[in-house]
Image (cartoon, rainbow, N blue to C red; front, side, top):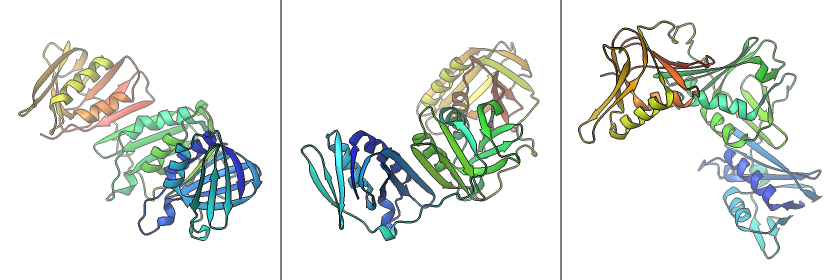
Length: 370
């Protein structure tokens, strides 16, 4: 293998492929990049056996070939060398890298030990969507997801593609976020739809890798998902299990004993104020007074003090007070962009609902137990 490549192009490819690096002590080969040069293209691949990432860039390929090299060392070297272009050549069991005033020789790992990155062979059907639009939809539900070894089926985001559109859902049992995406925002040839659970780690890495305003192609089989564009490719296992039937169980409440409409930014600031003293309990009490013209947000912690915020609000329904985890409330509000939001309440033992004028996104959360 012998190539000439622009350092910045190589640097970007390595930074993307790094998200696939594994950390297994028993399989040190997973800490390596697989480099492949052919047809004036250079690809950098890495895998942790759950996710495989490949980044591609153009290069002048003088001699085709492949090599496996320590990811940490190679990435650090490319970040350090300041030459505009790099001459890279594989010689027996070493890789020789030359810049304007630099020359480095690095030992190579065994190519035979590098695991085969799976592929999706059947690409008859395709789902296509802008990376930034899809990423924004993922971000809105990501906050409600937490990894769980006990319940792996909730350790990811439900991807439910059907004839009416796409629904993304995440839950950690204490809260649930749902985002609906209109058919006009994507293209798909999956006539019967797709329903699968994309792992939390995969979603996080997708957001880090596919961060440009470009279309991404998605392919699915029974247990894998492939996302790709002309520069990057990521293949991942899907979560094996059935996502909770939150629709059938009617988890998202439709009717409320009380509804509060309040300015979103003022609500966020009041919650941040509560968080300043809620260092351990994380509790904030929302109280609807008798005049129903405002709400109070109260927090107390013996070691840190008390807070009280009074916000003007449009209130319908009963007077009540409900305690929430302020962090959970804050996460839901971050996913909304409208000027005002509505909090629907059904007492201190039933789910509450955050919503706004954008009906495509809703956020359900349980009150905190006292």
